[in-house]
Amino acid sequence: MTTKRGLITDSFKVMKKSRRGGKRKKSPTPPPAQQEDVTTPAREEEMQQLKQFDLDWRFGPCTGISRIQRWERAKLHGLNPPEEIKDLLLQTHDDPEYSMSLWREYPF
View 1 (tube, rainbow, N blue to C red):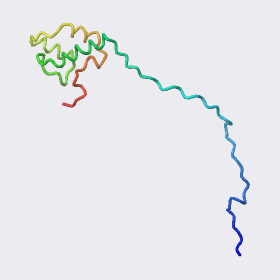
View 2 (view 1 turned 135 degrees about the vertical axis):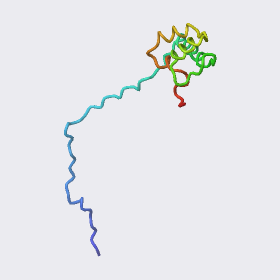
View 3 (view 1 turned 180 degrees about the horizontal axis):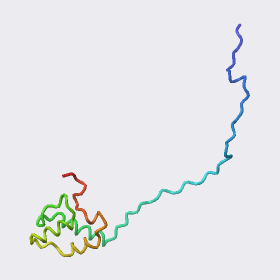
View 4 (view 1 turned 60 degrees about the vertical axis):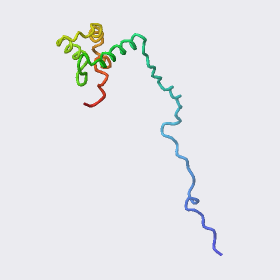
């Protein structure tokens, strides 16, 4: 009869490798940052006014230009755009959500 053959690893001593840095302490994972959509009622009202300005074709097309350029073009042609829109645009000229039109995401 044949003898039972063992595995090659049976002839070697089992040794566990120690970690180089020792045991690490597990730090608790921080909770995921909650992104709160902070929209004040005033901001919502302002955005609604700008949206209405974008949708009003009496002041000309709004694709490809900023809202302030559209307002100035309408004023130049005597179309009487609302002054409160100009004031709002001048106060918030750094924010692209205010300065660019509703159609800024669409290719033309």
